[in-house]
Length: 370
Image (tube, rainbow, N blue to C red; front, side, top):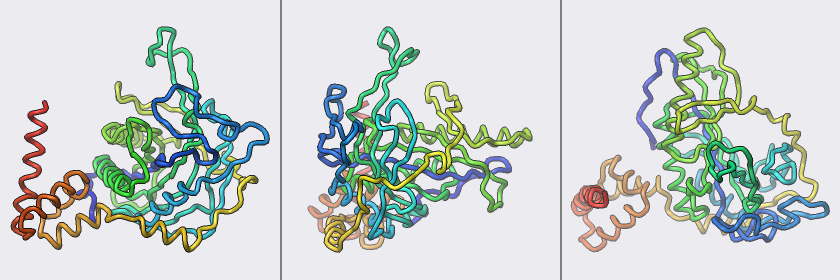
């Protein structure tokens, strides 16, 4: 099922976009320790020797996070590795207390798959870093002259979903990420709230001559915190790259920050490669083995997913493609539609009438609220 209309080429160049999505899992405790997860609690109250990386502290894998990771892989049609490995990804940032992140490298939990027209490269488990807060003398966030760290978030269970570079416009990236968020919310594995940081997206962007199959030099836009900013940031980077190429200047591989206030792109650092992180197997964790029982439990927990629901609305109830997707990709509208249909006679005529009425109701409520 298509997730967007065909892209419009930018001048003589066409964009190629891949997304890396970090999803905080809705478990009770952190990935490798017993600290409770929280949002909005006072800083640094949910920490322990394990998530702070103190000497002698040993990690213990969160079984619920593994189950959620498998559910995500199954929902995306990925191949579930019956044996996968954790690695240490070595880097130093102020929000990384251990100086490394426990992640998965060459043997991830899930490989391959597809959502809509976009292929999935991999889905793997890892832990989140802490949270940097930039403040100035007056306490203002902007114009900051110092930073503080809240370690409550460090060690939060994450799933990273990496797409193949199959997206070809900012609008398509926005729409596909919306479908992914709806799918994850339907699974119940995450709050997927971008404002609270439980869903974060990085975009790998490159351009190439129209009709070419070769990939251009890519840049990465980091941690965009809303769908609208993602779309704006990707569009700005496409314009920047095509401008450089039209002027005969090369595109340099680097990591960029998009400021939604000014619309400016600034370079953060040269783009790291795998060897820069000096991956090696995590010595304190045994390989993760997915048992038949765990796989069966994850399969049994899968609900009807948005893409399947849209197809049912279309084929069983006779709704048009756009209307079926509009209802299925917004869970609350789809649930309301099915409840209203059950209260009517359940016919295809009733389905069409209710499906056409609900968006008008939503628009009226929105107008009244304004």
